[in-house]
Length: 439
Image (cartoon, rainbow, N blue to C red; front, top):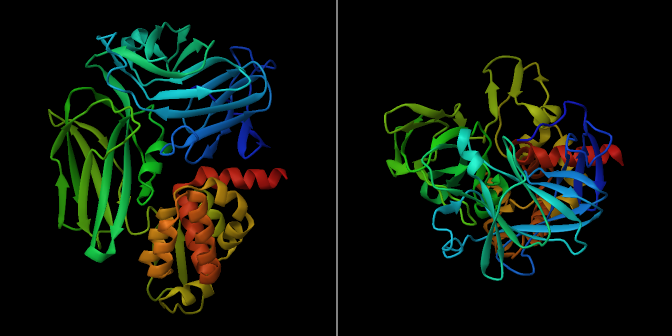
């Protein structure tokens, strides 16, 4: 990741995206300037490919800007609009360069105003191999190999004259690369089982792209960084609170998956009552290359402690979620069940947040089925509501229908929605709060 100043960020709104300004140099185009961070607008079902989502950046002025979701840096010579999306690396594209292979996703760019002067592509190479990085420029069915201006520890920088698909390439090596381990969880109440999907991916694959393809699963945000060697075999170990589980496959060969489709590397099927797992990744010699902290499955990472017979109920959380949780002291604790009892004692700041930011959440929140599955598992929505939301073709339509259900379900269901937001989508929560503070 390129260096980001420790100065306090200044947030401002640009269209439906957000920008966080932090520069070390007065001239935003100066090489020593930190880029301004921005969260792009996500356009569902882009015009050219209905099965693909597209990122949109409305640039307010010349300067350096870094996308929070992809880590691409744009050097802009003027204000304007930029559209970009991940497209498929067709197998024939590099036939003319037989010793090259993709070293990152292939991005298609468009800017009607022609306002991009340079692009910085994030890479995941370690050591000497990064000196061999090049950029493939795909135009008219042909591929030109571009030598970069500079390769930093994190990015490959090129000049831009004509926009079309660009992607990093590299001669195949067995060298280690920066990688990431992503976890996705789903409860299947009808089968009394749950699934945990584990993805081994290069570090320059955007997490958001994987989330979009697995929106019915809950993304578990945990430690993910590791170094993995291409072409080498890795084995996953699972330690669960329940012994009734299956793990497939036993071992895999790690390959560079550059999308646009991201399939699970491992799948663990567990008893639905399994509350916690710890995962460890081993190389072929049995050496540990990555291990997770205990992964809490019952509440996607929140730890709740209720002291029986004591006069405190303590909910332990962190980050944005901590702001809405309180320490409840009562003369006696009466444990009840059901959404009505929960709603009676629940702090309502989360429900207020969901109400206040309804318009923004409808446009910007895309993991709708993650919320719907949670509400369904807790009997907060009916089977008919579930089917109606799932049948809607776009995330925005799903969100509008979800809000209809939330309004009928009361504040407890909105608190549940907020609970998911702060645990799995804290960046969006922080952005919305910052925008609200600035307005």
